Length: 423
Ligand code: GLY
Image (cartoon, rainbow, N blue to C red; front, side, top):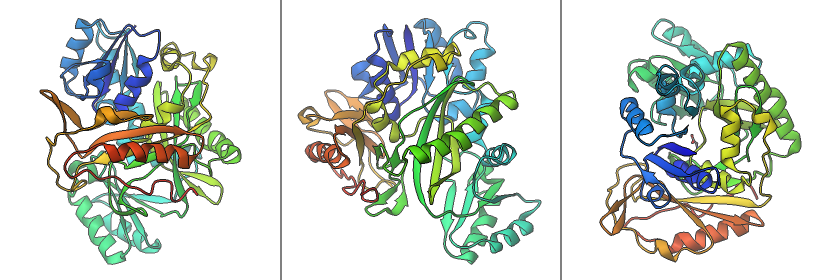
């Protein structure tokens, strides 16, 4: 088979690494990819939302199956674009149609869906210009910290968690007034939960499903989960608190109800579902759906998928996923993200990276890199993920940290405390 993966981050490199291991794959392409994907696949220089250029590439390369990495092309309807095109309609796409992608594309849609299908989630109210004063009154009934979520996609920046009520009220007004453009024309004001978060990944053909390894990611830039939010500084799988009892509740109360709800809505969902969950005293609550794999969770989770991922993707395409086998590696896997100095604020690209060839016992997944002549240079805030196996969390992390220390580029930074909350 000829496979195209859409995207350019560490997630897509990790998916490409896993797909490449399949005997079913003759040729692998990544669009647009990065310096890491170029080592194992052919990069095609087209943007993830340039559907016309993607079509051209798919036809030119005779692609059989497309895996969509990021959310934006899904929310913009890439799967629907394929289905509506005579030349593309029979090509398999792993990634939901736009109606399904709204679970991530609209927080309001997702909350209504959860309410309708009795999926446990914190209380909320959706606020817009029409009901802003009621929204402020609702906000004042909540306890700090106050959670404000832009309805639409806001490049990962649309969630504000604020301790002071006056500041929260001002931010709610600013959001509705256009702080995140159209994305915050509606704002979900949500009850804050106390507990610990984890990421559950499900692959589904719309009916059958497989639950992939659960991971914990680390979003803050600073050690001890302090400082600004990032795209993710690392991840660990498995998650000790996501034990069998907890995961049974997740499956019964969230996974099955979500898949049945999508069916009841007439939404044919083929792809990944990412459940952002809180464990509140042993009970799972969903705080967000994403319609893709997590990043950097994928860079750890793929290490633990022993089965042929293409076999599972075929199951999604042929809608017989339930008949396919998912075998997992029992070991722990982790990933440590090396980022540019200054990230998640301003940073400078183009820093020459060295010693990548010195890495031993870890797998490198490039996130923001590009080839510049003979050099690999930085090309983003999150630069490269160092992923490792271990017989324990400490062993996996020790391996990643040993290799992370070797990699050099000006300003390199990574968190050295991953897993601090899982001990
Ligand atoms: N790691 C969180 C996300 O991918 O959204």
